[in-house]
Image (cartoon, rainbow, N blue to C red):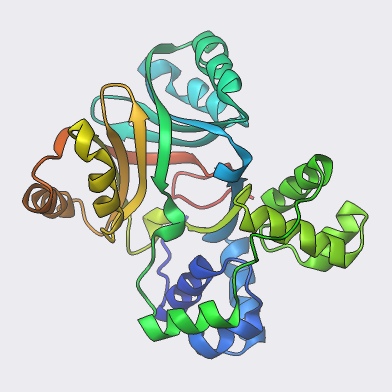
Length: 327
């Protein structure tokens, strides 16, 4: 595939969708600088080309269990192992990495028992895996919902937040069956309209909207914008494995979240206090970031790091080698 460069209007549109992934085009048009029809047309192009999409996954409000898993496998088995892992619905993301592990998996399971079965039974039964190391999530401090492309000004961000407010957390939750079906609809199309959702659920538009608002507001379902990283201004992804004194873990984690490159910070059980994922503009920026960590957070010890070489699956979506979504 040929390379693609996001232009400035694309980046403004995508930054706006990072703030409100389901906002109507009419709410975004005054900020992005194009009319609603033009924005819809451009989004349709970016989505159809696999360059950007709205991803969906279960959030902390659904009491899920999560883990970061390091995997080592034989070189000849890498493709087969990747295909099997990427086909597993509990595997949210798969990164092929350089460093002390061949892959880094992000795993979300229904509960701790399900996570245990995945790690002990299913993962261990995959032919070609030599070893694994699991970092069970204790607390997800931040995820990619807080990461921004930095293409909009602060006053423009506030305007979008005002024009497209978040759903109220006081909204009454829908039944388990309705919410499960809603999740599947959003997994297919994160920007599905209320009319489409209502039709597929077989309920009225008002009930569909109420169910959606409750799931989003209570963080049981998460929708967030994703882009083809390798074709973006932030093509480098790095996993960091950090050790911090027990008395300072929470304070350090909060400060890490303030770094503009950070996409994930998780407190984990195991040899590392924190696992962090960042996106960078250049590989050389690793040195800059690590120097900043040393200067601002001297108690943080970088135990290991791995650069993502390829991401076959990202937030439940299969990607091609260029990082585009496979439709």
